[in-house]
Image 1 (cartoon, rainbow, N blue to C red):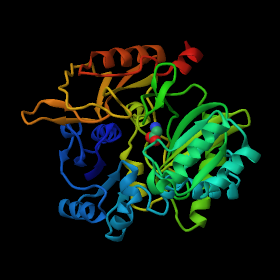
Image 2 (image 1 turned 135 degrees about the vertical axis):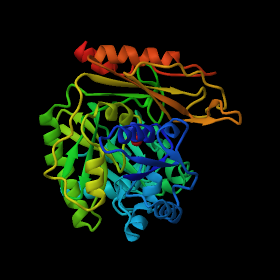
Image 3 (image 1 turned 90 degrees about the horizontal axis):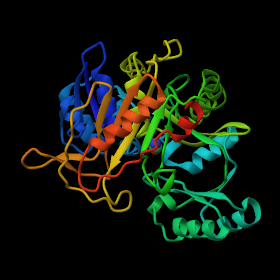
Length: 426
Ligand code: GLY
């Protein structure tokens, strides 16, 4: 089985790792990939956001499956184009990817279908958005750019003044470009967050184990928002009955609403949830695997990832497929980032990467090879270091220790990934 994997981050390295562990040997091509993925796949340098370039490569290589990692190729219609050419592709079409690319459309869809989520209004005019804050929402309140904003478009505002400033920056200053042509004014929710992924065939889902992301840069959830500084799985409150509840009240009605709208969703549906006192509610959907949760989740998988990906990409139903199987114990992922991340990462430094035991996986995210073949930093998030262990405490300790042993100038990482779980399970 020849597979083309699109993307170049830690998530794609974890996908490549999982696909390489399949019982059926896979011949992996990655575009553009990274130096870590290069140990598992042949790298091809193309523009993965260009549907024609991707289809030309898939046809030339006669691949049996294209797996799309990031949201940008999905938003650009790569899967639509591959489907038109008869090439099996895992990921939603451009229309279905709007679950992530248009928060305004998706909020309207959820509210119309009665899917549990925070109440929100969508506005194009700053004056009207501020009026909504002043008269109907108050503070704290959440202001969101509707479109793709590299994970920075959600602003939690503690005061009305902060909300007005966020509205001005999104709608008038267009700090997120056209992604800020519309903004959502959304009720603030309290509770704990949970990331739940499910493979979707348009009708049914195969859920994965829950994970928790850590968005803030610094220990204790302080500092600026980032793409994610670490994750862990399993999450003790993400019980089978909670997953069943989310499936019944969120995943399946969402797939039904998307089907009815004429944009059936096939691919990986990522539910960002808030466990509120009234039960789980949707914070946001993403149309692809999460980063860095995938780097924590996939190393725990003991059953096939390829089988459901192939089934969905060939248009088959997965309702009768066996549930995913997971190893016992816990997985903790610590991201090692460049100094200056997230605003102005300073890169280009040589990396000292020691060797680790089999229970530690180092996923490359922002690395490149220098002219002499040396490994150099090249992005904000440089590595995601996943440790597997029989207990949460041991995995947390091993992930932190492994991250501390990766050396490059300016390296930063959190030492408290999973602190909430530690307070629950000890
Ligand atoms: N973990 C957040 C994201 O993937 O968007």
